[in-house]
Amino acid sequence: MGCASTVEKALKKVPGVTEAEVSLAHSEVQLHMAAPVTFAQLQAGLSGYAYQLFENSSALAKAPTQFWLHKKVWGRAAFNTLNCLVGCSIGDFGMILFLQALYPDTSMMTQMLLATIAGLCTSILLETILLSVREKFNWASAFQTAFSMSFISMIAMELAMNTSDFMMTGGKAAFGNPMYWMALAVSMVVGFLAPLPYNYYKLKKYNKACH
Image (cartoon, rainbow, N blue to C red; front, side, top):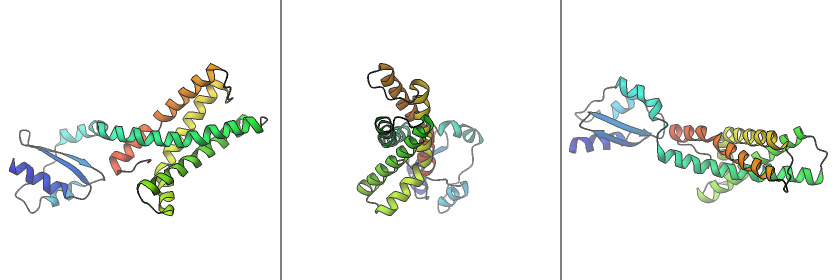
């Protein structure tokens, strides 16, 4: 066990490695990384010890599948995506209600476009506030981080939400119609699921999250 502990501690010191688990029974080490790490970097991390790493071709073949099987990352990605969904929904549905109440003659294409823009703005605003308050970013850094990390995710979410909503209701907010509320629920679910794999990928590979 001492050998395993030594190797694990040495590999955890390599920049980008968050976890290292050595299996003496299988002569294998399983790594979790917050950033890309080369095999040469791992070898260098053990250079001061009497141990050496060898690439396992069968393990490498399984890597793409194992990449998507980290439950904790899925949980955090789901939480991050939910935050994005809340931010997008505030602006998106708020804009649709505003236009249909005060400017009912606005074309459907214009409504969808303005709703998407509003959703992006409110999501970035919400994320900026969260980063500033929770992570103690200054406002400029919080805004830049919110925009760069979340833009693709929010675009996918907005397109999914508005497309599903339009297909089911024609984009009209009819509160007295049960079909509207069903369409709203469907569009929220679709908006949540559409960017979830992308958010997981960014979080798993680069340790970057929507929120």
